[in-house]
Length: 559
Ligand code: SIN
Image 1 (cartoon, protein in one colour):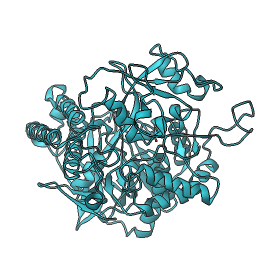
Image 2 (cartoon, rainbow, N blue to C red):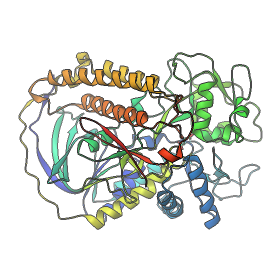
Image 3 (cartoon, helix red, strand yellow):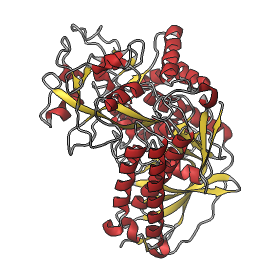
Image 4 (cartoon, rainbow, N blue to C red):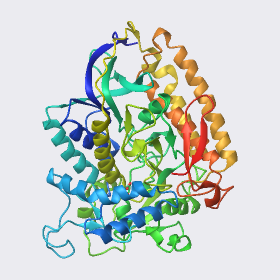
């Protein structure tokens, strides 16, 4: 057991940002011009979903017609549920934000003047699924997120008003008179032992990303456990559209190997999908073939034998680039090529086995167009938030753009709204132990494994009432077992360690997904119900809104 420290007030900061991906960093840079910013990040600075984004950032750089087409594509992919004003903001403010990023030092790939590599110095635009034309900027081939993260971090680190708390996570949002006034932060990898400290802030921005770890198969890194979403809900914030979890169609499917993302850009460069009979099966599913919207492609792969309700199904599906000529695949996709080579595979030579994996949460903490949640003092941006911009299915490469645009808007709203800092009194919690939270025998890890498998089986690509109800039953049993473990960890149950916070968050997010998916009795975008296979606009062209609490209410609202 590790001794914890007395919880005390560290300090007040002007602005507390939870998460150091694109949305959090972009917001911090604006906020820092007007006050001190503390950016909290669960692992090393730079470890975020943003860092792993491969394909790129979609942006309409060539004028109003381009912007209008980007809006059209975003709405088409979102399957009748995109909140148009949010999408309008995304596509029209996107170019400004990307140009700003370039001024700040982000190096997107540019033409070299050689055959097939564009005019010298010109930004290279790639194509991805459901985009009507090439509009995706990329960096270092397939490492766009890492480059954006690098440049934003470089800028943020130079700013005297921005400090980072790494290996630190949100434990609780502190409320006073109905307003978020601070947070308890768990410094979980402190060399002198974990400790919790309370920080007061004028405003708190949740930019902690999604919750891919709620599924056994995910392209997300281990940090993506939905803590920000679950803890915001616990503080009273409404969540929205939680039933819409995007499954990326093509994650590498090798036994014992993590579901490494095989970017949509591969299909943008001409990759085919083939089943185990060698058929190019997308011909049967959508006129845009491999470049159909992501939800359509993912379900087609599930139906061809993998990634569906039965996780053990073994009929493989392959990505095939062997016919692609005139492009140096190793140069265009260096990261992917390196990873595949490590497993004896080559894009030029081999069929690459793929299956869908949980990738991106369209839903999240409900916000207005400027990141305001339903709780005063609490804001959200990026994947953790839900503005309705993606509707039921996000258009490829719109997520980095979302983080930039809505991160900046949230910062502006915070500055416009921020009241005086109200000081928070120190809360003494006493010495104690984190106990079971860090004890590998506590059973928490096994519970999380069971939860993730249950979610994949019951709330994956193909759902129905029986599956969802059985998922709910498993989630409740796991939640109950978790409560027993928490209560048995002794006097310090108010000081859970990382493993406990993550497990509790995953359990809470799973519940919101299951209840929202049960309530939506139709199929739309990423949410497919075998028992309600059609889209039902009369009843469900609305956003689901979930409030945490004993009943876990879901209602539908027109935005
Ligand atoms: C990809 O490269 O396929 C992922 C990009 C995205 O999620 O939009």
